[in-house]
Image 1 (cartoon, rainbow, N blue to C red):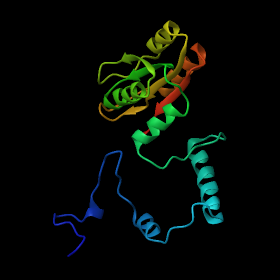
Image 2: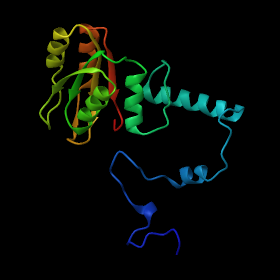
Image 3: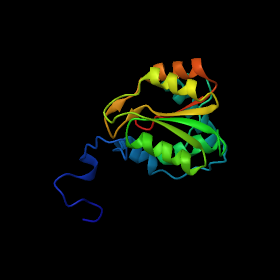
Length: 179
């Protein structure tokens, strides 16, 4: 039988409890089996417009949203190279492997990264974020992972966002891949 898995469960029956890849429902698999549409044509424009409105509804925002087809790492890279320049100072709040990864990506693009490294298994303290920002008034961005899957810890994003807004004009760049 070509295309089947020799194990006890069919591939479509697996329950993967990870950020990705995720199992696809049958309706999605059927949709993916349809012919491609022209990404520059009117049909795609309607599809993108509808999708944008739906994403805004899910995120409860009227602001513009960017739909980025790519990997999580690609999204993190895009967030940095499209908002910052080499030499810009950033505060990287790291609470696990993916926070560390975000900081490493920032360094690879020539950003001046100061880390607030939290003990793994703990969330970032918004008060400490405040202190760190007060000590670096030239910070152009704060990098934070919302839900750190390597440790199972979720940062208090509303509290951290409030601190960033109060203390600086820095951008808050959030790794929300698994949020």
